[in-house]
Length: 306
Ligand SMILES: Cc1cc2nc3c(=O)[nH]c(=O)nc-3n(C[C@H](O)[C@H](O)[C@H](O)COP(=O)(O)O)c2cc1C
Image (cartoon, rainbow, N blue to C red; front, side, top):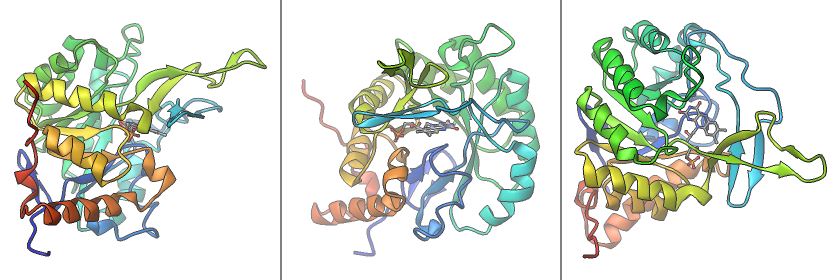
């Protein structure tokens, strides 16, 4: 059983297994240390960090929905400098890859954050482009092909570490955004961030979230996320990290078989903080049961109906 290989490579980034924890659902990485041995994870992705600390949106910031949740946290975080001082020293002691997720309100802010972190002992950047472009009208960067290209280009030029662009699904063709990310030098794309959603309180006749709309995540979005990953892989030759509604090893395997090199567990961390290790064990059991000795044998093994 132990000779089953779970190692995967995303460009130059080698992970001990394909299971990561998704940004914003696992704090800064250490909050779940009492639930399981964090060294077992393929990688930890931090909460999105911005240049300066942000308090985020006022409550109500979270609403439960059928098979999912809406959140409008507003990228509350401690900022890059505090992260380096307060969180990174402990994170660095772990034997897992540390991927820092960056959020910003301008292209320059993305670059600045990456430059500050570039000399720190971290393994890669994940760039959250689902942030409002404050300088130019507030539209999310991630819905603007040119901006995603510009951010990727400038971030890649500012670091020697792998750059993963985390794509929003709130566009017509997500593969166009993956293509731009690849052309501008991204190592991989993460797909997907949350879908825009809304819930209304019929008694107050107000939106349940203070921000009116929020991001839908959880099992409700899994088939949608899988279709986005499939669309990217049909059209662009770039490593994809699958995210969206993954709760168990069967869900994870659906993404891996479709062709995702790795997966992230998000909302389900709130339901079962030890889910990521159960998923690692479940993937190993599946490989053993079906006679595989290497995870790479099943990645992209999907047989599409003609
Ligand atoms: C409460 C909450 C906070 C999140 N915060 C971030 C964040 O700071 N940065 C980011 O890139 N994604 C963030 N996400 C999105 C998740 O990382 C993930 O892409 C999304 O929730 C879909 O996966 P899931 O269905 O497994 O949760 C957040 C999601 C939730 C539920």
